[in-house]
Amino acid sequence: MVKASPQQKVKTTIPQTVADRQNADALNKTIAALQKVIADLLAKKAVDLAIGYGRASGGDIVPLFVRRPEEAPQIVWTQRCTYNLVRYLTDPEVVGKSSVRSREDGRGSGTGKPAAVAVVVKGCDLKSLVVLQSEKQVQREKLTVIALPCQGVTDEAGRLLAKCEICPPDVYNPSRELCDVVIGEPVQRPGGGTLSGPENQSPEYSDVDKLDALSLGERRALWDRYFARCLRCYACRNICPLCYCKECVFDQHDPRWVSPAAAVASNRSFHLIRAYHLAGRCVDCGECERACPVGIPLRQINRKIIKVVEESFHFRAGLDPQAKSPLVAYANKDPQEFIE
Image (cartoon, rainbow, N blue to C red):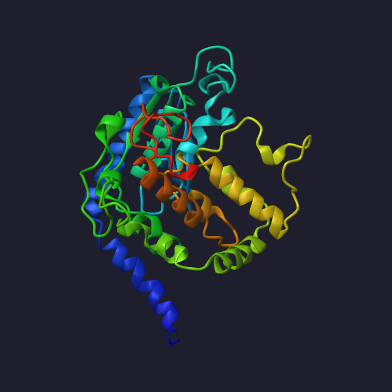
């Protein structure tokens, strides 16, 4: 008999610990209810397309696009449903050109009947949809939002993702006011904070506080080491649900704002410009960091800006579809410390 190494033992026990937090019968009922809702919507022609999760031939959980009721049984729901499916709601190639608002005039950019789409979301995904609503990038009346309470999602080894460890209950149990259908009972799980807490004392920003404790030179050196890894593959941009610009500044050639070369200086410019583009908009869904093939901790950059926006303007993106980011709205009561 081959004796397992300590590392192998960890990999086999962690998934069991996570799986123990799920009730198999309740999960199966949730999946069956989800499949039925999607099948009924398609059968009644209430939607033209349903975007959910399916299982690939190799067993991985991947986005699934269902157009016929008989395809609904392919829909699954597990702790490996990591993708933020809201990303596809602004992609004309997926949902149809007429269902996506034009960047110029706010009207449908195609011809014919706009596509009606059902989308499966977790609470963190729902926040990015709320931002798209506030920015008028989706036609909410054409969407059926199906939300599921979330036990947290895991990586390939069964470890809970870092974003899930700090997810507050009012996120992992999605607000029924923002959804059309909520399937499953509210979940209880350890960890997570709240959306409001003592100013400058929110425990969920401990990772940002550790970075802030470093000197400016130490931070510069640390991030330059990270940026030196960057391949400029644009996986972080392409998977982001809020990167929907018709022409990205990084793809422009005349003028060329940032060199496409994968060098530290141009990589630094790329990541910082992208972070500022998301300021007051990012909901910390974590897809950018998950997609990065070289392990750059991109959430730390975005979370630093989220913390500054929250402390300066008492604002969090993704909670109210009527709310505008303070960085695109003016109010007399805005703090002006930066002027001094």
